Length: 168
Image (cartoon, rainbow, N blue to C red):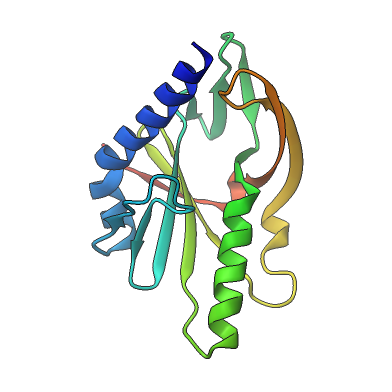
């Protein structure tokens, strides 16, 4: 039963990738390719761009605020959207390797699909601090769909630091 929840969430995410691909190609103005690897760090890639899609069906942009409805039906307003910290670590290490080898760095984007709105944020490492003012990292300890509590680091990105795109 518990693994069914994880599998259902995983399947929902994969379906959202297929449905969202045309929109993402418009947003990034390139012919993105869905990564065939089951647990790739980023869902899409093309040349020097990688994109991770996080679909949030219970989160929507209403009257200039981000409204989230919890699984128990409680409505809260949030200032950030999050993703798993290993994705950021992967992006930093990948580009560090490329810099050290004289290769062009790649652009890494995190995209949240909330109802008909897409919010995206570019992982940026300009200067020593990169764009640290855009986010904070915290440890979350909760059930991530496996039936037991787990601790993991997540990157919370301020919605005010994201770009918003709406499709009808």
